[in-house]
Image (cartoon, rainbow, N blue to C red; front, side):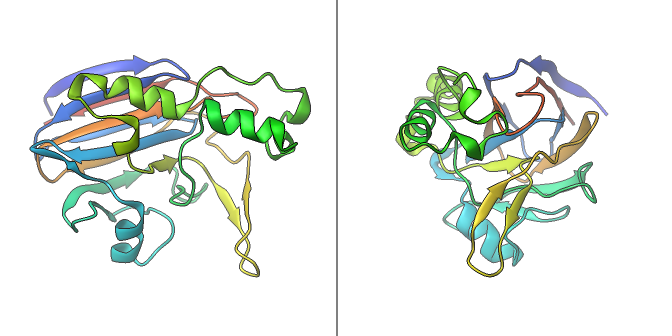
Length: 209
């Protein structure tokens, strides 16, 4: 294995990088990661939640599943899941952010998060982190797709489709590994993760051949 890039991304911040087809991306964390991917040659061809769920016949992303664009291109393959057996990765929610936090406070919905009405709202979240991380590639907020929320274990009711955040996270950092199936631009936010006891943590990143 040849290491191309290795670093630690701080909590509630964003990261982006280009990858060549065949390279692998390892993310090591115990916090929610909002992750997106784009075709490097045409960033309009971005990861799509709906096509990914349809092609994998699952509302969760699982080991060996593919990550697909809206045009049905295979962008990445999820080749190793250190969270398997502990929890699931969410493909329902979008990104947290300043606007969502303010709306939750205005609507009296902060009890959806762990610390409820006593919590201090962060001044930014994943929407801002991904926007800032992708600025150098000219990708605007409105062109960033709804992400995969790695480590965001959700309770989904089979009766009415209701969704509830949980505190299920790895007790220590575990690895998830994705293989690029073509040249890509990838990005993520280390979420402020207000539904967990940790309140968000850093994420280790490794790109390798």
